[in-house]
Image (tube, rainbow, N blue to C red; front, side, top):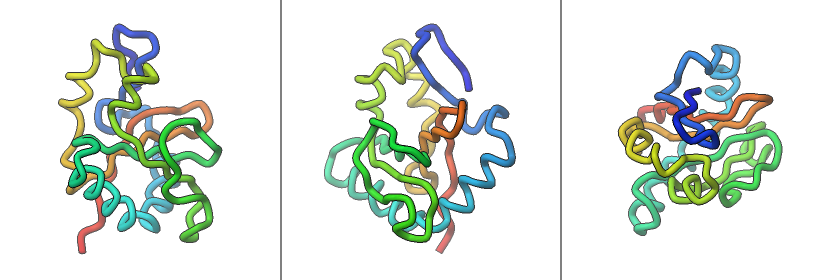
Amino acid sequence: MINHSNENTLLDDANSYDVNKELMGLISSDFIKVADQLKEASYQIRKRGFSDNPVFVASRRDIPVGQLLIGATELENQWHYKASFMDEFIQRELIGEDSIEMWKENYKNPDEYCCLFVVHGDFAGFVYIPYPED
């Protein structure tokens, strides 16, 4: 995770080395169970003009960011998934004003990758996971 000039800014440069293999394994094995729903939600968020940059908050505990989309155990998953977007992260100062352009540059194609804001233990950061191919 990279902290830029704003102390409250959390950025991850597209799956930095701070995301250890164990955490990526936990996220990936849970993500596969909800990937289709998240991909559809991403499409709907963009299609309806809410945001070009959907973000899904993934955590095992309740986090006051986003709107609940899939609760833990709904689809045999262990994580909660909430729908959000870049603007909420800016409003909550999780992305600082001076880091918006860098965040957009690192944002991956939402048709191919899911942007997750993962909160687990003392880790909080953006992780991009490719959607499974049909």
